[in-house]
Each structure stands twice: as C-alpha cells, then as structure tokens.
Length: 110
Length: 410
Image (cartoon, rainbow over all chains, first blue to last red):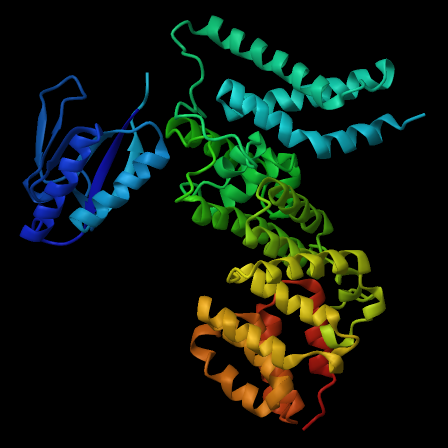
C-alpha cells in the first residue's frame, strides 16, 4: 500500500540547512526500513505553469499555480506502508524532520 | 412461552457487536459486515416467530450473516471480475499474543475510534457498529438529518477501506493513547445523554447514557487491567445512579444539594464504589477518569450535602488540576472550595476564569449562584441571564430561570 505525504507550507523560502539535515536522516530511515518509494522538494508555487489541453483546440499555458492559496505543496514523499497506523507514524516523524505539516493520502490500490 | 420479539431485542443487544466484529475480521470489510449482520437480524425477525428461537442464537446469527456476506461478495465478483477480494480491514501483521484482549470486538472498537476519523464520526461509527443503533437512531440522538448521518457513516467506511485503517488492537506502546481515544468517545456519548442539548430534546437521554455504560462495561471486560477504563465506568455508574433524582417531575434540574438521596440507585452506587476502591488498592497513580470517579464516590458516600467531605473533594480537584490544568477543572474546584472557604473566596477564583470561560454556561451559572449567596442580587440576575442564554439543556434552563426569578428585587 502506498501513501502520498504532501508537505504543506505557508511561508517564504525553502527548508533551512538544519531542516535539510533532519530530512536526510528521515529519508535514510525510510530506505533502511523499506518504506522508501520516492520523494522530492518543490520550488516556490510562483514558478509553476498550468497546462490545459482538455478541449479540442491548442494547449493553453498559464503562469502561476492552479490554485492561489496561502498554503501550498512544498514537497512530498511516496511511502510504502502496510496500513494507516504505520503511515501516520512515519508522517509524524516526517513532519517533525521537515518542520512542516504533512497530509497523508492513500493511493488507489488495485 | 417466550416472547420472541423480546428475545430478538435482547439477542440484538448482546450479539450485534460480536457478529459485526467476527464478519469484519473474516471478510476484511466493515460495510459487508454491517450489512450482512443487519440482514441476519432481519432474517431472525422473519423466521424465529415460526421456527422458534435457535438453541444458540449468536452462532445462528453469525452463520446466517456469513452466508449473506458470501452471497454479496459473489454477486460483486460476478459483476466485476477484476474486483479483488475486499481488502479494507486487513490484518497481515504477525498475530498478536492471544491473551486477555483477544476479542474481535476490541479490534472493532479501535477501528471505529481511530484518530484519523473526526470525533463525531467516531461516535457515530461506534454507536452503529458496536452499539447496533440504527442510522436513524444515531441521527436523532445528535439532532442531524438521517441522510446526513448516513453519509457520514458511509464516508467513514470508505475512508477506512481506502486508507487502510487497520482492524487491530494497537501495540503496547500506542495502547494507552488509543484507549484514551476510545474512552473520550464513550464519555461524549454518555454526556450527550446526561445533559442532552436542544430545545426539543428530553433533558436526559437515557438511551444514550445506557448505551455508553453498556459499551464501557464491554471495554472493561476486554481490558480488565486498564485503570482508566475502570475509572470511566465508575464515573458513569455513580452519575447514572443519581439520574432519577436529578430532574424533577416538572422537568427541572435538581442540583446535588437538593436531590432526594433516597432516590439514588444503591446498586449502581455500590458497584461504582467497588470500582473506585479497586483502583485505590492498585496503588497506581490515577488518571483523569479515576479522579473524577473518586470525586463522585465522595459525593455519593455522604448522607446529605452537609455531610460531604469537601476537603477531600478539593484535594481530588487539586490532583486533577496537576493532570489537566484547564479552566473547567478550576471552575469545578472553585464550586467545591466555596463549601470550605465561603462564596467570596470562590467568586474571586471564578472571576479569574472569565476571559477563558465567558462562552460557557456553567461559568455564568456558578457566578450567579455565588453572587446570590453573597446577596448581590442585581449582579446575580445578570449572570443568570447570561447562563440561560448559553445553556442548551431544557431542565437546566428551567432551573436557572426559577432561581433567577426568585431573586430578591434589589
């Protein structure tokens, strides 16, 4: 079972050096314990481009994030966990490491 | 000559949770378990009056429910070949040691009271899956539309399945916190029954208090060594024991000092006192519910209000304050302290809580009573007005209104 951990943030700037170091330790733990699937940090939301090719015409490009909000996605983990109890514990450790809130959402399992 | 509907009602109370829990374990799907259990009871209602009650009703219901569940899963598999066996409440961890807590109902409680579910959802799910209340009954209890309650329960089951909330007794590390979460749900059900809110609601919803007591008794059987479970059960019993004396024939709240103590239920009081003594004898530091139970044990040991050991009660509130330094605990301590130190000292303590408790009716009701005792009628009247405006319980509103209207015109 895979879970998406979305890192939610509402301030300017990227992770501090201290936070990065804690994130590295957490990532190592994910790998060692077999939970690691993928992870990444994202640049600020104003670097985003929205692409819309849903209609018949040409693809439309627009500058900026798809939704303007105070809180935004700052990064994510994809983890493997047997159930939500395990996932929530990992997310708690992840939130502590990156010093930001984390939303846990399960992937559709096939 | 047995009255079959009565037998079915009793078997429903006794067996519902066990049937749901055993199906949830076997099929790994709460929705399947709930529906099949409901169908099995419907089948019993049809058959038992003609065929007679089977010798082991619980086993009959589980077998019948199993058959319903298998039928449903077969239909679903036929409808969609790709649909895998339901995987929602799975349990693929190492089997936990079989001990005192090897009861499927306990797994079910922890699933229904999972911290990833909203509090109201936990309450609704617990009453449905463990208590066997219908969606309509739960909706009525919490004054919401039946469709809204149905949706809440359906959403919860979908989340349990999609996010894989496990069907498992938590590990020893997590157990105290998770048991605390279960107790919070049961206490909330009890309090909603004990101080029912809403203009049309009965002042005491004995169906809810009884259900909360029943589920807490079950938890006590499942976790016999947990002090807080015993504490909450004792607290509920000692509160429930006073129910008949707590509301007058005219539908007005009767406060502790004016209650007819002869109308208290001696069997419930004896049971509550036994539990409190058992916890005291354990020598283990008590948690919040055990201290609250001990406070109620002191009240219910007194022949009348003057006989009450107030210094003991204040000492217990001091102990509670160390665990839970909340303004509500401080308010209750002040009420007890008024009996020792007088209303003036208590009023000063209460007034210090004003900025944090201004929206709480009991804060204003306490002030009103202390001001009344100090002869400060005009201020007391204003405090009664504020309490009445904030109170939600019809019996309490009736009591506060009479007290206000009896104030001297000064």
